Length: 490
Image 1 (cartoon, rainbow, N blue to C red):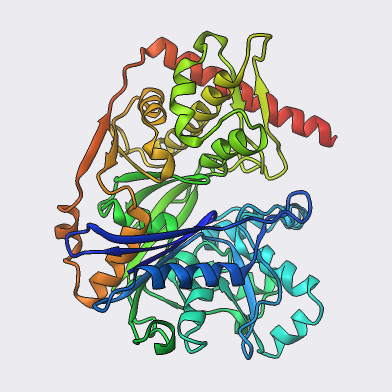
Image 2: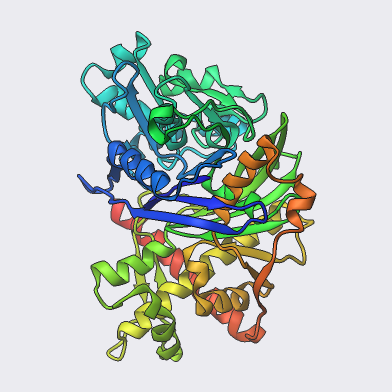
């Protein structure tokens, strides 16, 4: 059983030994925006929905449970009552931008990068956790007294599933907090001091495949072992069988996240990518370079819900195909800032090239194409950091990978093959595989990789001049957007 707790939904998926889906249940999860730049979720809603989804698909013969989750989102709760003291602060939240800017101004970013592989950005968990401790009445005193527990969503779910007997996380989720030293494999005392976080609130860090306890028997009528945990993007990389150095996957969900397996080498990025832990299995750490894009599928939601020019997400392909491509409309979807390789938390979105004939079709076209152009930025940065990455194949997954138009345009812009697997629920499959590997249900990685099957391969049909023109216009649009933000601040 895989628990896949994402930004916009909670899901439970049951997998057979051959990797096929036997049952699936999903519940949409609302986001709350109490102030400009703030993004929150109700942790009780996350738990209630997760529990309901699990109960809907549960059968009598569950070998083990694996958990995958939206990363960087942080929760703090009372150890005695298990009640959250504040809403979960979501990875998209920008409220700690000024705190990160202050730390940068004081010259701390290089030290944080060296220890964690992460820049100082409100995206990561540390400043969110510090904000809760500093802004919820009595929270810091309780934290110092050891009566509070904190963690990413996987940790909160483990606590609830085991009725407070397990306070743990895995190395991939820990590596996204900006509090975990990815080289020493431990919570870093220097970073804990920098962000003013007491170590007592933090969970134990385990391998991705480990004994994470057992579910309380009152929840499902039996006590089920929990044997695997990984952050959603690392789980997707595992589900895509990207076990060898040089293999590359990109997940298109709310945002877009590309992971390049770099083996046992933690590459220090010169191109403002993240150095992160891809997995830790049997004590062996595999590292990755990651590029994070904040807006992918969220852009389609914007067209549908905010602008109301897209009737339904599944109509996006037809509208993009019907657009007048000669208008060359470019959208820079910096609705919550720009991620890699720009890392500007305060920059906001812009659209270029509008004219009297621009309509809904062109807006849809520009939104889908922006996802592809942002991915091109990531791939170019990866090639600079990892010279071995010459000819590559990109494995894709996530809800947006179902869009044939977007995947074809992605192959066109990247000028490399794009492969979509038969099982597009690769994030959940990765979590299930970790639990199944630890419990003996699934085979070793090489054998599991042979189970990966291709649904469709997209190859470039765009000529070089047109591709170069599109990339040049994109780079010019991003540059203008960044300058406009800088001028506005000045």
